[in-house]
Length: 350
Length: 225
Image (cartoon, rainbow over the protein chains, first blue to last red):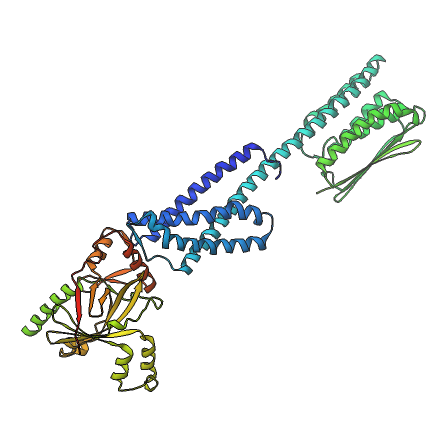
């Protein structure tokens, strides 16, 4: 993690202080009772344990805060092992010298004679350094895991926010177009206006309530498309060239909601509107096992450039949605020819 | 029975007086690096209590005891001892018609001579009836004595007083391996020879002016043969 925030660093400093306080308090207590002959430590035992701990704190901290970050965490394992062993040897010898010479200057009234052989000292230092290394790595792992979970939650929240934003871009877009249709019917005072309002109401219910889930069944999504096509017939009476064929194995096959409607919406808006004499929309939907195909094609001509800019916004939204909800599990292809505009969508169920 | 009771009382008293006042150790107080051989120590000496001290090099004694003139004539076991105690002395101590012998090793720490003394045999104990049963319960310990050669004819030997060690232990100012053994809870050091040397060095540096004060001290004067 390179971009760590100041709060985390401050937290780590607090953890280091707490970690060292607990570690050295526990070590002192354990060593005190090991070094005492009976279970009632005397003044000389406190002095010896304190002095012994002083000689072991330095190599342990050196290992924890220099060797581990410098070599172990950067995967220089051989270098770490060599310096680790050298640390044990050097500091064990320093401990011997400390108790042979320097301790007399500090506590001249005391005789620290029978304690540990060199081999026992090396064992104690090795246990301390190995033990604290393992404890440090365990704590780091817990901390790393916790941080990773926090980051994962943040990422999920970001995705949720992004999806919510994309949906909020789709819904007004759709509503705006639908109201235009009803407005057109009302202007012409057509009988079908009330039916169109009921159709729109059904579509909006689906869009507002049912689509706010992670996945919807293919059956519901097909019903939405059927409703939408039927709704569009109120506006475009000569939409006999609109075909919708589908073949599905499993009606409960789940897909991300409102993924197909914008594509159909675009076809109606820019295909039917674009060339009133040669309009067509062909929709094909297939689902077999884990694979889902959706193909939509509508008429297209070069004088539709102006409206293409608007449809581009819709397609970009769909692409962003697909990248989030079907990462590496989708194919989205737009094929433009002189007379047609095709979109191919393939989804793979996880 | 009366004889036994009297003898037990006398021995116990003697044990208390003698055992209670010098520091004893299971292991020698010296290491091979500090051992020295002082020719001046060899000879006949008499102390202020008129006890006779006859000091001989261990190698000479072992040849004499085995009636050999050359070490190569010794058997393997004796030859090993001959080499092991190359710089040792045998001290024959005779007082009030009692005789005992000791193995002594001189060693030097910070230019101060010391003697490590351990018993070889005790004529008094050997004379006891059923001595085998008694003897199998005994083990020779090492004692430490400060050893000063004043001149060619005078030496002082001051045994290290157990009072000093007991005081250090009682005040919890020392950590040294030891055990309290026997009927009288006698303190016996069980520290290694390395640790014992380390203790002697530190003890020599201690501020206690009476650190070598002892009840067991001998001033020897050379006796011409």
